Length: 156
Image (cartoon, rainbow, N blue to C red; front, side, top):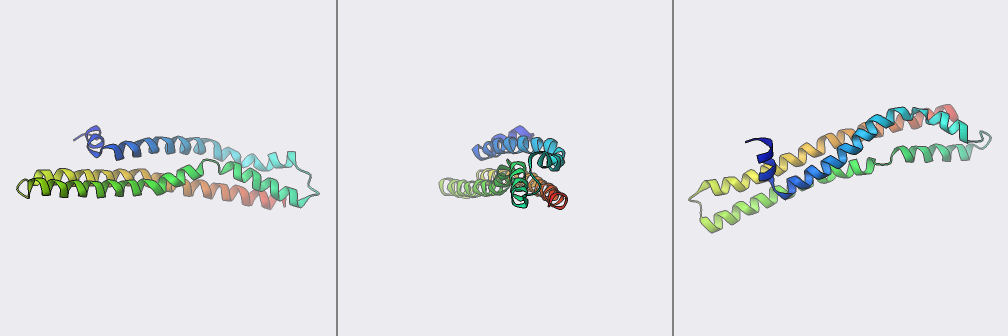
């Protein structure tokens, strides 16, 4: 079986997972190329702020950090939802296998195996989508935390 056959066999749940995976990887690539350049946040804040007001400086740092975090919620939600969708496909596949057993009895195991195959394909797809999104989210949060600490250390 090739990849397209697995996707087709996985049904609507795998298509949904592919769609959210496309969205998530678009955000990940955007963050991957733009976030490392955001170390210039300190220069940006220095240009905008009056250093005599420590409160406004702290608020400006927080504001710039929140701007850097934009999009990460989507990545985090995809990392959380993908395994749940895989689990939904698993439950659906098992339900289909029991329906097949009820309708045809246990005489033909290929009917049962086909539904279990659907269950396993959706589980795998959910995990394949979730793992890189989870790793990316943690990586980007770590980068943003470093940028924030550096900004606070140099400016406050």
